[in-house]
Every structure is written in structure tokens, then in C-alpha cells.
Image 1 (cartoon, helix red, strand yellow):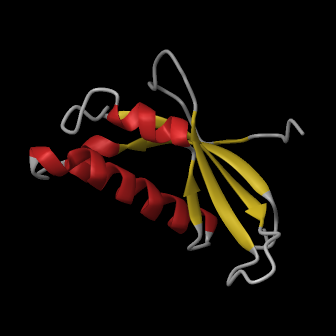
Image 2: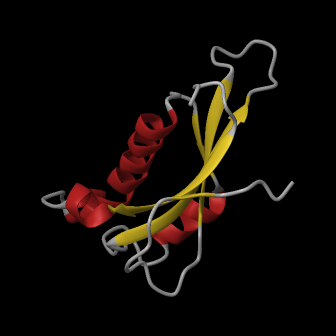
Image 3: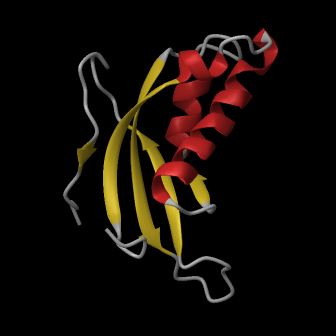
Length: 112
């Protein structure tokens, strides 16, 4: 698969193992950084944009009460800005699921 492909995938990310040992006042900010790092790794682009709903979902239980696992929909999209460094960017948004147990990575067909 080429890096130029526009694609959308759903992932379950284990934040518990990424935040183990992090000071309790820095857990939510570290979770945001880890999600950016995860999206960069899996989508191959350094331009990662987070949906405001994802930020609300991460911070809803406060700075130290971050969920253990989060279901994410990461989309690699074309960057239409003229003076952009990269041709593609990753857009990360949360997926509301009743339970994250047993969920696999899924390629999502475009709804547009």
C-alpha cells in the first residue's frame, strides 16, 4: 500500500501501558502525546490533528483518570493548503463503543 493512499482505520490503543509510571498530574497530557505518536507511526505522516471530541473524551475524568483503552478512528487525508510541508495529514477522532474487549483493527469504508 502506498503512503499516498487516503485511508481510514479504526484502532484500539492501550493507553494504560503507555502511561504506566507517569506522574498523576501529567497523565492526560502524556496520553495526547502518545496518541499523536501512535498516529504518526501508523499513518506515516508527522502532521497529526486531533478532533476536539477526542480531547474531551481523554479529559472527561480529569487529568489523572485517563481510560485504560481508547477506540480511535484515524484517517489519512490530503492536505489542500498551498504552503503545507506535507501532502497528507492524519485526523484522529474517538469512536464510542460499549466495550473495547476483542476489537481488532478495521479498515473503514468512506461514508462520504
